[in-house]
Image 1 (cartoon, rainbow, N blue to C red):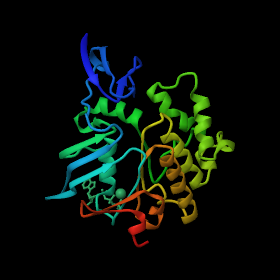
Image 2: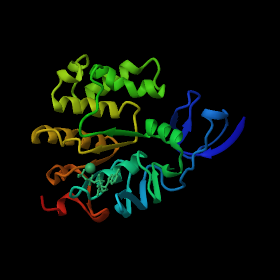
Image 3: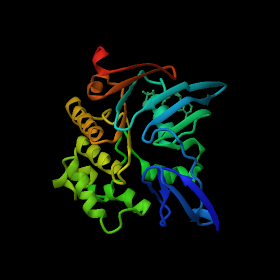
Image 4: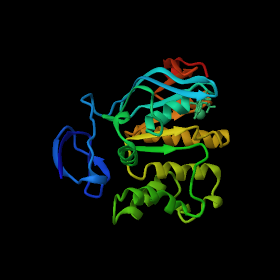
Length: 277
Ligand SMILES: Nc1ncnc2c1ncn2[C@@H]1O[C@H](COP(=O)(O)OP(=O)(O)OP(=O)(O)O)[C@@H](O)[C@H]1O
Ligand SMILES: [Mg+2]
């Protein structure tokens, strides 16, 4: 048995998952040995702010090295709706992936909602991600043999959260994205826009503070794409931090801020009003 003392916006439940801690209360917990035991390195900064600080990410491409992220720094307040725009290859997906803990920076620090995620090991990262982040992809990535309801419920089952209230919460999430009538449909029986709304409901399954979306409208027609961005804007209005990556600057009008990427660098940050669309 090992004892850890931690002040952290997340704490480990007896089921092994992370859940939000109330503020800065100090927890002294007897942790399980082996699989269950870990320490979270926590930030002392303002809770809810996400910070990417001087992050570099290099990839090897044959003989040469590509700087996918080159000294990128970015600070996002809780509840902001930030759109990341820039040409193909400018580092948008890499930026989102390091914020999601899917990819690790070679240098710099990524601090999400108070947790320095690049200090976590793979198991800790997976726990943190399951609790703190909802991710939406261009190609939806729904499981084809599961209904909309089952797809949205899956993250709760994987994390062991909300036992006894999963179905109720899932129905509420699907209602929130306007799909109350389609919960028993398979993905193949839904339109692209409906599938993406299921994916957004799935991203909300564990009530994350942060929603990260990589080109979620890239596979949709313009009107459906705008509906999806409106849905993300509504999530932000309800207090979620939303980061949306897109090629399409016209979709960025609902954002509170745009971050412009070029050649792995964050070259400008603008409010939508100051941008030419
Ligand atoms: N796994 C990898 N291995 C090697 N190079 C990579 C890898 N992932 C990304 N890159 C390179 O890093 C750079 C940034 O890629 P990234 O996917 O972040 O760009 P992007 O802005 O999302 O582009 P797109 O708009 O086309 O999706 C590119 O030059 C890309 O080729
Ligand atoms: Mg990309």
